[in-house]
Image (cartoon, rainbow, N blue to C red; front, side, top):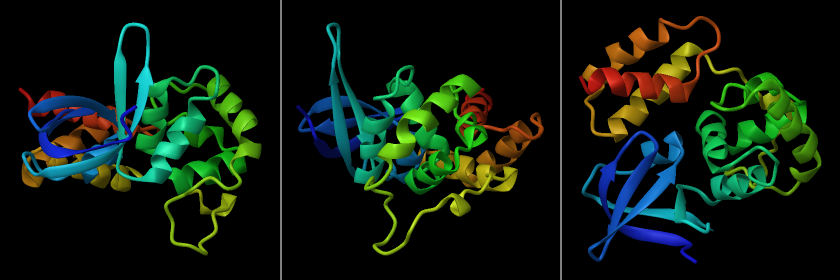
Length: 206
């Protein structure tokens, strides 16, 4: 089983990247936050990996931090949460916010992730609320996470995250910023980071 990859970052897309390790290109799926944390191709990159073996494929999921990988593993224990949905959740909520949202029973925060409806959000809260103790958050030692730490992302913070992600994909900030703002302007209160990045990529690719 592959637990970590270190090599040249050959390519970055909206939800995956290719890492060249000694001439072998590994396709790694990842959250938008992990992809945004990667260097510019073709620089050296290192990601933690969760290997999923299926009858028809061997799939690799990459993470910039061990805490994100641990939460990915926990999320996928919930019925209805596959790898794609787990990555969508982690793209919207980093581990500290995810823990706090579950502790608070905040289904609205969870439904900001693509593929998560109210019923699935309730199932996640119900099944994981008692399993959060001891889960890593990536925060410095001694920093506690509580329901009070949950903050609803504002369009401004989502715009900043989207621009950061697009910059990680090789787009200049000056060209990405107006496109992101235009995409966000199409939405009202409920705007999802993954949707913003996806729609912005479509416009920038024209």
